[in-house]
Length: 168
Image (cartoon, rainbow, N blue to C red; front, side, top):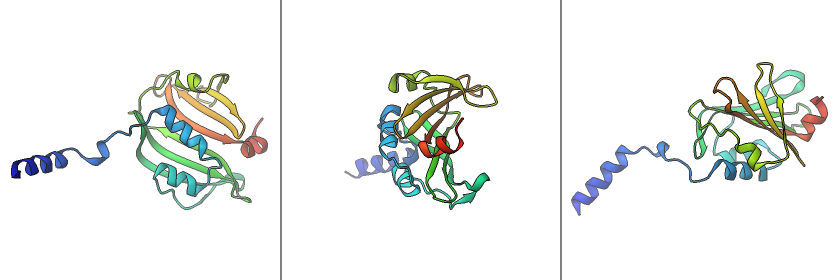
């Protein structure tokens, strides 16, 4: 019994808790994220298990909350930065952006399979490609950039409030 206890103890010491990968897939994570609408700071923090910064000012009265680190939310999905932008006057959410770490899986083609009927468009001045799917609450924007050879680099939620105010 002592040997078993010692072996279990050593095993626990050798396998760090942060190394454990979540059991959910990218698709399941996106569905959970979508169901959290409207994306308030409190809901985003609770869903992601991350403490966001206090509100920081931004241009045009917009401000935001953010967190930086390495956050693993689904199999192969490693996020290095979370940004929640809110409207200055109302505090209403404009967008939620998850920037993926270069160690994330590629996820090429997965957005179109999960959210068919979207369209592709250049989404940055760097020439990054995006897959955009219009939703009742706004748009999903999946950015595939040059930095990772057209692998998924960013997952964004753009709310109707933002699109109405700042869209084309």
